[in-house]
Image (cartoon, rainbow over all chains, first blue to last red; front, side, top):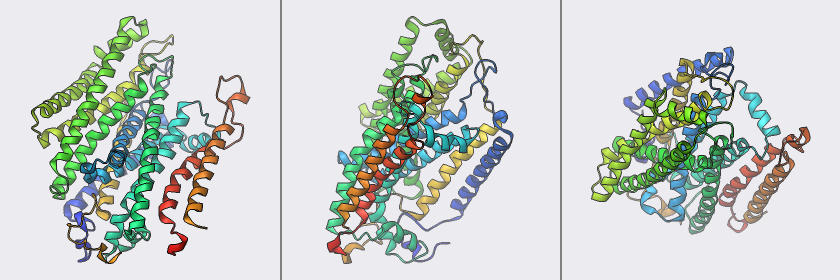
Length: 436
Length: 71
């Protein structure tokens, strides 16, 4: 499929074999199923989902979709954090995963926005009304304006500017993608002045992005933490817990993606093992902090609980949600222990680090579900009995379709653009010699 | 117009729009009626979003617009 010129592009850019097309076909099927499910929901209304009103309908109006909004926005945390930290703290050894992380951030935020849209019965009305009437004191305002506009735009700008140099390199290779790389490079020639200007711009961007992302993730926590009538939600710990679990899931997913790219594209030299050891150590530190916050929150809740809060905790720990609760706790403790042991022994196993990345992401999805649902079905200060919520096939297919769309966009992007920074030693890159 | 001027113009326009959007939206404080829950100007939250977007976009202007001397 690839032309001779395309094969000179680095890291498999412009080259696609049978395995790639099989993967794309599989993901397209899942996206199609998700789109079909969404058309059913759009035509028939949210009656086809398991979402119901609290109280009289005994259900939960926020369910799987909202759980995945928080999960996807959480995943986005790692990408831009890693990219910004590389720039500000000069963590050069993490540079090989910088682009993967930036693209992960952008796509995760897009998936988060898609999850919000599918949760709205009337998405058009919701979006228009937010632009017309949103109130700054509402945490939704922060979530919407800072996460979707500020955070997404900042991440896209950062990704674009950071990648211009490689785009210019690729644009020197004739082929079908040359026009795309030329457009992306937008006249970049790697002159001393351009390099200095880029360093200044990206440093300032990094400096503004970090407080922005802390604020953005915190406002998402405030959406739950400020609801005084909901046990399990109301509390000062929600924003920091959201932030730390976002870091856990994002770093975990970045480890998995980097390992997959390393294996499939044979990037053992470009992505050395020490990248993974650094990420693994960062991950267990985040897990320790999250564990501490979880313990403090539970101890506070069980000290002198209101009867509804006690009922909620019983449901979580011993009742309907117990298997999910303990599974998520286990999936957080196991990676913490093994990564900590690896760090102490100074002997790192890549498969164990990758498995830890998978475990913490499964745990994060379950935790997000447990944050969203039980407080609505069991934690309300309303004179109704406990409710119930079970997602329907429509919700499962839509969420699967959204995730498949993200995976599809990710693999296709890295077939047209280098997945990691192009080094002078990577074959086709004796390209700057004529530029200055 | 040189690069610095365009960059500062984008950045400051974004800042002005963001601040204006914030102050023209519904006032911060207890909700006492429609006047305290409705925005002072329709689309003020949209202005805030456009302002924030422009502020970050100014980085692209800063990097992409060539200096007059280099044209």
